[in-house]
Length: 227
Image 1 (cartoon, rainbow, N blue to C red):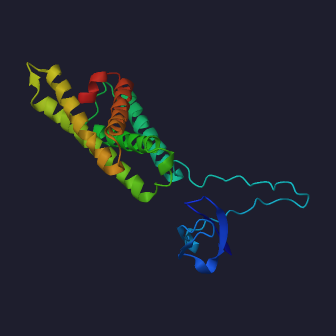
Image 2: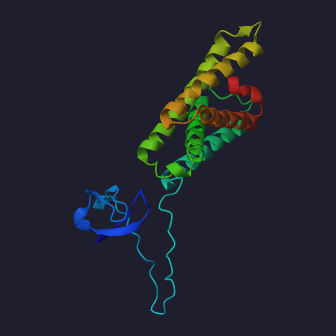
């Protein structure tokens, strides 16, 4: 196989035998010493395939190998979301008085909503370039993040009920400041687990907060987010 060479001195183009690959030699025109490329550095350009009539052959389309979400992820996310909403509706219509779910019921609902929004948020925010990055480990990590969101939410409830109460009513400014602080801190969790930017982590947390707002609206009292 002949190697194409261009002289850097006179810019003359010529070919040398591949037995001289990687060696140095003088240009036949201007005698400038030239470094002959190694065989592994030689770029081989193949001619385009043609039909028997001489027309360019048809190129087969490249099918995308990966999608942005696995079926198991979508099933877990949609199942947890549906279960959380159904349980919320049951609490709403089975309560004879004002619907105010107990601690463990609220914890279960929050866990279901947290799991679903964590999975869905990861699917949306990770982008198409990371479409192959899904599987059992990803689902477990997303579920753990959702559960931790729920624990942080219930911590906010306990702190609000135990410390931020004056004359039988919650001190709203203090609760708002605490909620903002916990949201800002929680943002670092998806950043660490999913390798998100801070803005993406903040959106991930906001999805869980939005699900809590829907949960409270279904129960008929937006204040139940902190109760």
